[in-house]
Length: 112
Length: 114
Image (cartoon, rainbow over all chains, first blue to last red; front, side, top):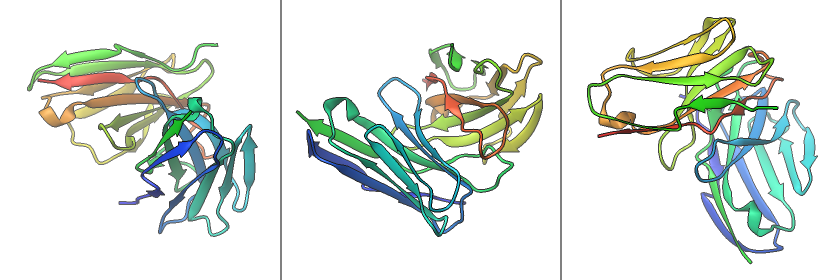
């Protein structure tokens, strides 16, 4: 089946550093979504991307929909301790389906 | 405004039993999807319902079934539980099942099979 390859698998950074993670696939996606999940909670939507090349920001977070429609990245600037969590990319292959395909997640730890 | 609500939050069952999980979507959302998240992995799609009809199904056995009610709430049923069914079951809702309507998740039901 379709897969999203998300990297890196985990990151341990110092507070204040910038973070970058990405997702790639061999398939073309119509929509890319980035979620954050904390222990005991469901994924929380951070950014949604709908057009190839689209660059969208949400506070210190910036994400882009790759021009080939096969990849996306998420950047976090000036990380803070509350950024800790698991970040998932997710994509939709066709416009009329709700079958989100998720990456394996990037675990982020921030050292104060 | 209330987000997606799921019940129960935790559940312990034994092999062979069946379970029913419940989900109430965000007010105004008509589409509900179910996902299974095994520890250490991303969620895996199980079902999507819209206007009480199944719109999509993932690679899960027939032991898994679901339905959506006129008020757009939904139930996920799993029969003949196996140890491998232990997971976090997530419900997500969206206005409609189209790509420009992002899915919002509840906090899930943690199902443990003994």
